[in-house]
Length: 40
Image (cartoon, rainbow, N blue to C red; front, side, top):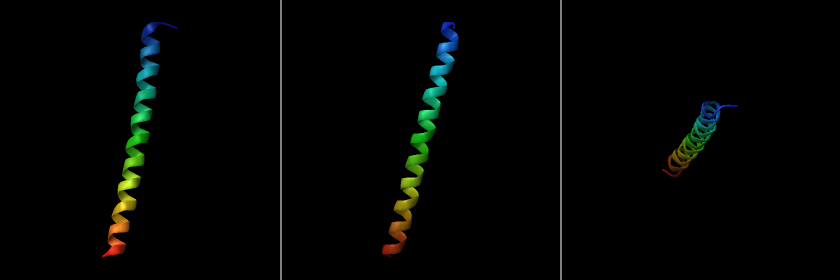
């Protein structure tokens, strides 16, 4: 395995991590918006 292969794997892991974090944030924001709507 060359260093470029390792780099590619690393960026894929980071990208997947970032995408999962964004998904969690979006779900949290959606739930919060629903909560606010119910309070009104």
